[in-house]
Image (cartoon, rainbow, N blue to C red; front, side, top):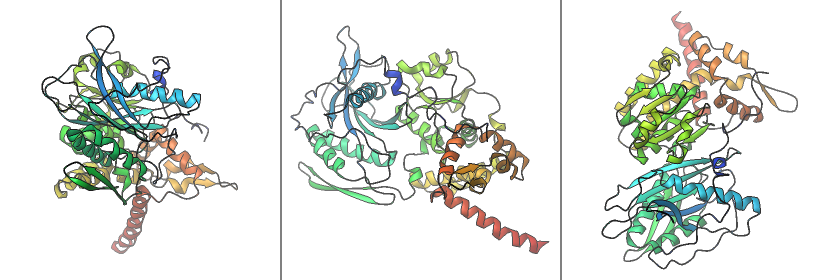
Length: 479
């Protein structure tokens, strides 16, 4: 298959961290641990640098960072700085140390992406959000954040607790942040023993639970259970915000744009809304993974991202709306989550997907939400299911068109694959989809593996094939 590259870049235009290489001085990122208002015992120092790819059983997180606002040396403006880091790493090789400095130098901007809107506050809405940093090698680290005001009276500077992990599991880390916030309200000193215990625990496999023992003054010892969902493909997402902000038809058009790897910008006031909606959009692509620029909340200093000619999926705070509209952008889908409208679009979003399959998705979404309860896991399942089914119907037969050579290496038969589809509309769509990086990366992994993975997508493929087999005898009987 000469027209499909065998080795593709995992991140268009390089990683987010690489953009900070020239911008950040090579000093020790994460300044000295400043007094947090309490005497905090220094946790045990860790020596390891990075985590392996997640499979279950590894550490929950790489870092707990506390980021606050500090006055700049010149002027009255504030800038975000790391005031606490756990664990502190020592004995790193030079390359590892530089990589850590880039990572820790970038994180404060994503904890406080508000630009110049930084000042002491008497009230601050509690916000939970996340960001993703992609390195040049395609590896990703997720920052799970909780922004809140320290206890006290009068104007105070907000603080962000940020847990950095290689693991995508938003619901579980949100629960961990709840525990961090509960301890924050009592004393910052009791946060760190809790995080030390969490770090020593192994991250559970799908469907399993890990129980932590934690002491809280005046409450005694508490046992905290953290359960990982059995169906792990939805553990990092909550579709509720997306469903509240947009109609089914709009979500379908956004999905269509993402499938063809276009440029998508979300606008919203709150960090939580931006974060949840962009993660939800990426999750609709399962079993495929967005491999291009992906920034759930763009810091002011990176607003130029919206001018990139390559595919991207980014979230921008509403205060930067006019700057975005004034930017010299190529074809883009600009989504206003506050008003539930498209401010800019290419114009063909309704025509990308096959009409019959569009109707199937819309019908399933309407029916599914009528039947579902309010629990987020049930909503997630009902929203995700029709999009997974869309891929089952269009590309679920992929494994039959990977021919194995004597050495076990697979070769994907692209032309035979899309010609196998009987529907012309489906075939037209798939001929475009197979040229995307989404599909190419998926197929490259499938070519390496002798057997399809035993995951949720494969389960749905087998169910669909069984339904077709049962349908055929009935059709013959009717004839």
